[in-house]
Amino acid sequence: QVQLVESGGGSVQAGGSLRLSCTASVVVYSTSCMGWFRQAPGKEREAVAVGWSDGTMTYYADSVKGRFTISQHNAKNTVYLQMNSLKPEDTAMYYCVAGARWFDGGRWSCPSVTSMYNYWGQGTQVTVSS
Image (cartoon, helix red, strand yellow):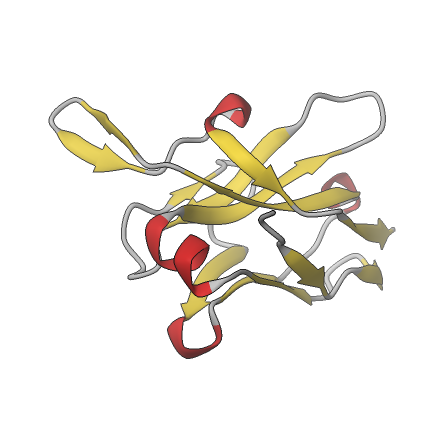
């Protein structure tokens, strides 16, 4: 059974920062797109940031570009999400994900589609107050 172990959520005021971490097995980490989705109450789950272990094939949601950064620590099989300039609308449950890359338009990429991710962490809550 694949386990994705998350940490780093919490509560912060608007403008603050948080860093999420997600650790996987070496097999999952080295052969999967990994990253983060989120779901706010009453809203659909959406991709936040995903990428490959070498830092390529990175996707960011438009709403987080310039504020959030996904990074990888290969020796620890860990992916991070550094979240800066947090806004109240970033409040959500954040889920670590792992899944296959896909080949589209002549190149490989990490998808932003929920259904493409087979493995999900338990979720960590991020709350941003105004």
